[in-house]
Image 1 (cartoon, rainbow, N blue to C red):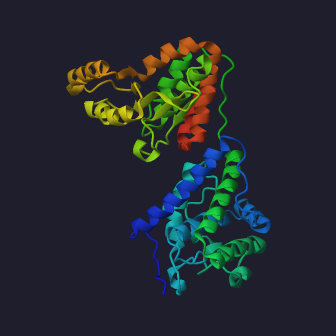
Image 2: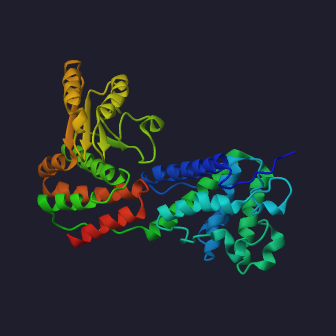
Image 3: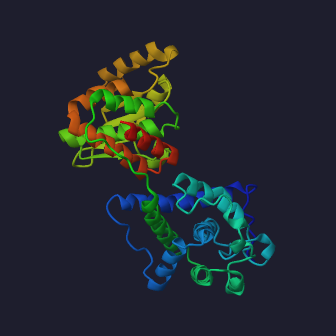
Length: 376
């Protein structure tokens, strides 16, 4: 007999699994979108069309249903993805509202309220039902929209196949990405930009702390512009701000690759004082991957207590064949942006917006960059 899963803040492992499933599907779509429009993941035309209608529904509450119910099903296949309330009873009953509040609402808030910005979707009238099924169609104003949700979740339950459920979720995320294009922030890059003005924009953008996301976006755009302008790198690979290097498999925050795919330069961004531990922690992976050129771009210099030891370590590693460089982010940017000249600075400003969009930065960060560009 299947167990009843009570998804709630009191069940953090279940909520964490839901979050991982949603994040993984979203990352997959964002990665594919950089190469062009995401493909169709559901080959069943009728189901694919139903997913599209559900995610573009004028009943905004419906837009939260599929991300919520499908992530719960993937996190624990024993749940019934049609269940809304534990009080429904029976096999697989669970509290979908908690999943929505803990997982889907924060996702929505972090992505321009792409699902329409409802603070508590599952307390709205359409979802004041124990389950998503045809027997509650009469209570819905949007009856066709409700039937779409029922049809999709019935198909998921009929198959009981995690691979199929994941395909449906990724299709949902593809539709969500399409919605996002309609609400994306516009970055008004000026036609001309001087070196001093460009640096002032960067400095102002870095005033507000962002958990490292803002300096990472700037650095990634900067190295991308350098690589393109001087053909130094074929690609600059960046990790997400929320993914540790160990999880992403990267040597550092940024990896600059040559045409063979070899990492020729690694770049670590620190929105804090650099410590000797920060440096030491990066050395084993750099040696393992054969990366001899390693940059640390920092905002607050080397910690005073670690300065002499850090400098000694840099000298020691140089003798051993490891080139380690420590630069202030803005000072380094001044030299780099002077070298790329005005066309390169224009390209850099545009690239910052692409970084913020492409890596799911907070709406406040995107709006801040757009506002600064507007004022220049």
